[in-house]
Image (cartoon, rainbow, N blue to C red):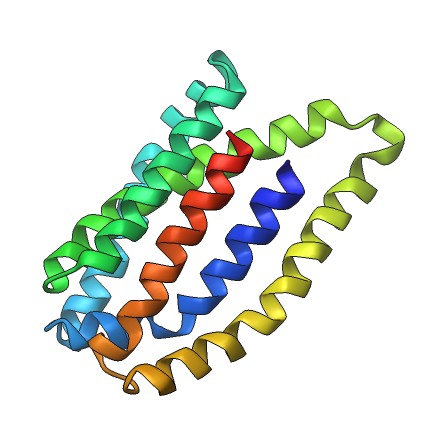
Length: 175
């Protein structure tokens, strides 16, 4: 399950990863706002680090992972439906919470489920499959952007829609 979650998410992330700033700028943000949004997201990440660690230690790991996946879907839904850069600001406030919930709980689940002698190999295999899928997705993303009109918000938006639908499918399977 963790291989499917990591590989699918990584593939979908790499569809949009290189276009986030261009998309945000296409939605009306200037360079300063893009930097501010990034700093704000890092600030939220810093604030939630300890509380998410506590939650991961004290609550059911599958529920923590599920909450992170749900927030991740909401975050990408905001990107897909964004009318202007403020939607991205809200999405970037959710992003560090989602990532912390998913990554921390996932690491503990993998660590707990694999025996000591297989743990590093299992973690390496999970990442290798994810990186392998992540190698092809930027090419697919670039092709879609070119077909949909180029480096504009309307040309990039379909990638976020695909990512949203893809996450719904993957996370439904994982759930």
